[in-house]
Length: 263
Ligand code: NAD
Image (tube, rainbow, N blue to C red; front, side):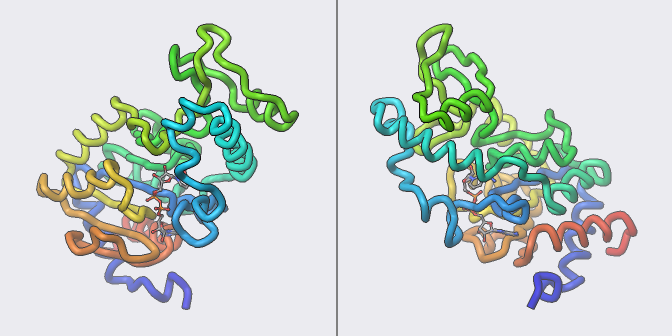
């Protein structure tokens, strides 16, 4: 059975109505919105954690051991190559379209792939809670280094050098286990989730904290909570609407319903 057959029209119409009536919507996305672009999520079978040991890639290890940094960059080399040329899919395009159609105040994402901006969402409305894989900075002075140069070094079998300005360690801005989330993005995401009247979660297992607090916070603030995911999540029990389906299929139908006012 396809996702289309799984997701009934009533649920599509209900979500379209919530979106059309909302005065302030926050969309919260996870790795599941990017799987149709060909990027693996982390927890599904065959995902990243089936191939790499998350403990080995943690921030404390990165900081303290040269050997762990080598492993980290090995992982990154593979991850960059997997993501090269990846394009937004119809779920990202639908989210970008919703920015024009409804009162969307923010797209808060746990993703690091930059695909919401590439799909057309305004960069100032996208809050990246876990950083961006295409941005390499010095951990000490924040100086920016082109990822292409670092990938070239790795491809040539060379070591990644330290910061040319201050000698600090270079690292993609992506948040590793044991590393704090970017303060500014988190603060804005919390503020907007606390005051929105609709929070729509798309493609997240909702088990990674503190990011997964946002739907709970929105709910406590009186917002409606909608969860769209391929499989059940621990927060389904507090949601006003749960849609188990494929993000691309469901969201394109929702956009069509909003556009044609079929709700
Ligand atoms: P997750 O892997 O824990 O959960 C993804 C969820 O999406 C799963 O429950 C899965 O069933 C669902 N899903 C997969 N494909 C789907 C589809 N087409 N339609 C609907 N649902 C689908 O991901 P998470 O909750 O985002 O947490 C993992 C963390 O790993 C993130 O915080 C992120 O930083 C990082 N990550 C990012 C990317 C990316 O940027 N694309 C990819 C992998 C992991």
